[in-house]
Amino acid sequence: MIDGVIALYIFMLAAFTGYEVISRVPVILHTPLMSGSNFVHGIVLVGAMVALAAADTTLLRVIGVVGVVLAAGNAVGGYVVTERMLQMFVSAGRRKGP
Amino acid sequence: MTLSASSIQTLTQLSYLVAAALFILGLKRMSSPVTAVSGVRWAGAGMVLATVVTLIFMGASPFNLALVIGAIAVGGILAWVSGKRVAMTDMPQMIALYNGMGGGAAAAIAAVQLYRGGEHSVVHLTIATIGGFIGSVSFSGSLIAFAKLQGLITKSVRFGGQKFLNLAILLATVGLGFMVVSGTGPGMPAVSLFFVLALLLGVAMTLPIGGADMPVVISLYNALTGLAVGFEGFVLDNAAMIIAGTVVGAAGTLLTQLMAKAMNRSLGNVLFSNFGESSAAGGSGVTGSQKAIEASDAGVMMAYSQKIIIVPGYGLAVAQAQHKVWELTQLLIDHGVKVRFAIHPVAGRMPGHMNVLLAEAGVPYDLISDLDEINAEFETTDVALIIGANDVVNPDARANRASPIFGMPILNADKAKNVIVIKRGQGQGFSGIDNALFVLDQTRMLYGDAQAAVNQLIQAVKAAG
Image (cartoon, rainbow over all chains, first blue to last red):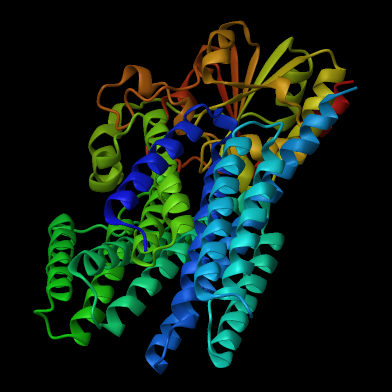
């Protein structure tokens, strides 16, 4: 159990971290980074899994399954499009060389 | 399993800690082009670690475990296939779609908590409800944004009193949320109605927003989904969700602000003022007629220029013309022409959208400049070639106070000696604003699909020797 005040500390420090991580990003990486952060909140998958694992009625199972399907889509889709986008920067960068 | 309950708990928490660290380091690495690909892989490793550990230790019944694995397979495979297949030009709407799914998942977690009822504290229920609200709005709002960018919804729905209707939905949702938390409402039906109204609010909020503002909106919903995930992380005592969700919430908020600033619009402006209304009042300043040019003449003009700046916009993305444009560029460079690309921060549908497309075609970084670097160079440029861009080169943003985009930083393409604009037709652009650049004396219009038009230019330059 995460204590309430500890949770607030985590929240505050994470917020600062997010702000710092993105504040020095060149414009060309804004779209991939938005896509990357979109992938990172795919961690909602573990929450949806826990919720479905504990479901004990049909209604809760249905909602849980919907949640896990959506979360898996967020995580997997977010990863695939981010990697595809960033891959292009690599190949473009290499072609620049001699 | 022979592990005791407390060591399972510790092991799970430790894996979440490692996952959270990998997410932050991954995002950090994604913020530089050199390390970007490794960044997403680090974050991916964190995701796999957290998922596998959860799967092993969550203690589900065999039936629930089968449901979990089946649901992951269905969602994962569908997303994998769609993500691999989608064209680079359609990336913005795919981000909107996947983001909406994350918001929906957060809302589903909240729904499970609220429907189950039981002995939860008020704080617990409040956080679950707020997260469910934000997640629902992000879910339905992102789906509308997806539908708009995908061309499934082509009109921005606006009517009188819309803001009051949205406000009424918002107040009703919040009121129901209070009932749910305090337990004074009619139980289950109140929870159901709460989610229906929250979903409706996302739809109602997003429908009136014009396509030009969609990048800001998608970024905002990305931040909101992060926040919702963070809230549900509190509810589930899941540190990985709290940290990852909050980091994305903060980073997404900053990104949204950066985008809105690049368009010289405040977030409130994007959400609550209807672009179409103001432009109808202020777009009358443009007089004069557009002058057409043949591709062959334009090609000759370009082949004998010394310096050309290419300004790509959404029209290039729609026509998938990035490869042809690079072919044309190489041809011109062989002719001894100095060619540069000028990218406006909000060209296309998202910041960096054009950079991604040009990178896909293989255009090297050093030919690509952003607004501050290149704006002074237009005066010494022979030809500014505008490919499917509109608002980002509209000089009204500098000169016409009545224009809805007045004050937005633009590329000074109008300072070039000649301007060639590739455009599908004579109509207004996506934002519905007239463009003073198109009727200038030195401007010539090359009508047609961007890919076809650039192809004609390639032939013309080749013919020019």
